[in-house]
Length: 246
Image (cartoon, helix red, strand yellow):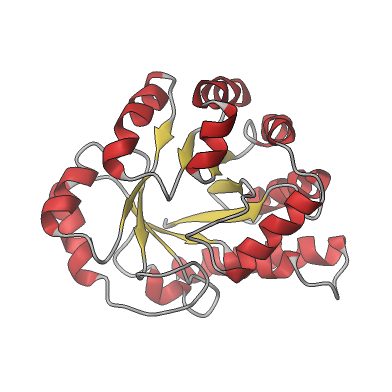
């Protein structure tokens, strides 16, 4: 059974909605939830996720509210925090580790933290029973792939193309998947550009997919009320889970 990871923006349109959506996504078959931490300069995110993050910040998003929300979600569905390093650094990484442990968080995704700089943080997370997810990009050399995946845990985040989330590009990943498999048995999940139309192709040869912009687009749809947004996002997630396992 191939796995589905779903990204949602924490606190948008409200923290209460985030909790309700998390529970609904679990029922839809989502295996792991990425709680996105809004940030003013999200370098790896496309315009959809960037806009949702800015709206959450304008609505008064605070890190302490992230901690409180996570405590209500993570005991029920495998949960990761996805954020940019400045957010963790500003509040204090030890503080995040403590709060993550208290909330039953399983790990972190930090796209702007290079592998070499991530090692001490990775060790600290593992000492507390959590994981820092490793990234592999199509531009990585075989030597670098071997180094990065050597000690990977939980899953390897394979970026589907060089660019930002949500742009829907298509590139063959067969060669890089083979390289990863040669050096690691850790599951490979593909992210960037995954939606109902691309999920089948993106899931080919890997163990799961990561969906973000396709869900967050619905959060931004001003023609829908919150109940409609909840139902539509849940339906999309359920459809993608079925598509990748057909």
